[in-house]
Image (cartoon, rainbow, N blue to C red; front, side, top):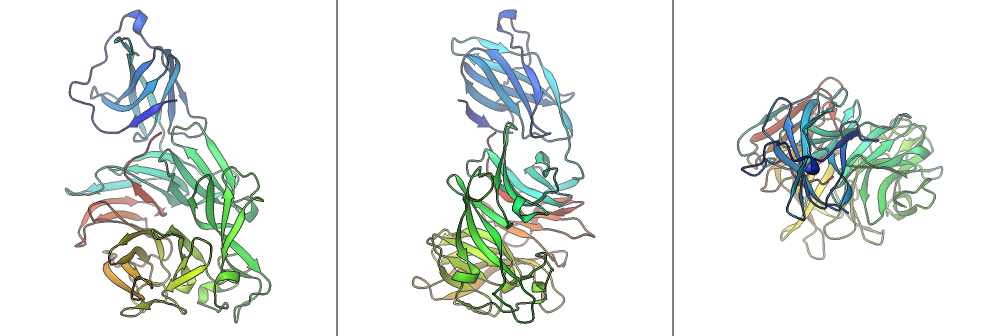
Length: 467
């Protein structure tokens, strides 16, 4: 078992330059590409027990940095070359400070980490950016590819979708920070899945997620995801049958078929109101093939107060589901149980980030603005939800940021509060323009920006990852 320390920080002052160790203390290191990921390689060797360090330097440079370290046992050992900017040749070498006090070292080698196809990003970083460390784990929407970006806006890890027609719907970092989790669409709803890619490139574990749609969360050996549910009896006025809605479905990780999944909250059975025709998006065959869609739940958030927060986009609502799967309360929309101060606060939004505070439950909504009065400009808005019995039964906006380019983001979009109070916003883009991932201060000043030539999907900043 390896105890990992992973960082892309400069090496400590006085980091040793490559040397020529005595023949009996030279490590013969082999380099091999990952069997699963194009931009990851593995260094392996036979050597002593001790503290192993992977040193890296850009091609043509002697600026060696300690990139990864591990405590290794005697015999076969390995370190991955991962989380380095792609489309570069990297020099590498390995040292082992053995338990007997001797230092073992490999000769320098080289490895090329290929770029992600059809991904082109341009970064602009201002002094004071909170995103000065950590990683963004998300995806480019079209062409589809799962991505990890570092604080410089560089792609340091990527995974293509499966080769059988799957598309990337949602990407999340794993709870332990050692994997990237990818929800994949498929033309056959029965073949949708959640794929765990270990960051070190050694494993690709597939979990069947039939009928999956939009979002999921990792649990303790399980995944809970939003699934489409069809009914020939639940009728929306002016809409053809069948009616599509959403159910929360929990499946054991590694399930081959999804037949062992368990359904939880179901909008048809557990939402206390009958279906209605919410907007023109609900029309037959618009999003769900051969069906009229009622709810279109696009966001699944673990509530910091227990249970779940759902965003059924077509209902313009946030629905709280209790830990035992019952309807709790609703903010926004036709049947709101919380009163929105100042009128509708979002339309057809997406949400990923919620936290608890003394004044209520805070949630960052990406307000796409669909069906709003023109001109529609999308925005990020921070909502404070105060459900009873602790709260006063209101929802209010306490901060917002409209798209500085005064554009409407028609689909996707995301927002996350960073440490220190800045906000990371994904302006997804469209078929005619690329997406933008940018960080803003509370005053709305932009301090970090990545522009893409293609549309960007949703993602999440994390402080650290560990291959």
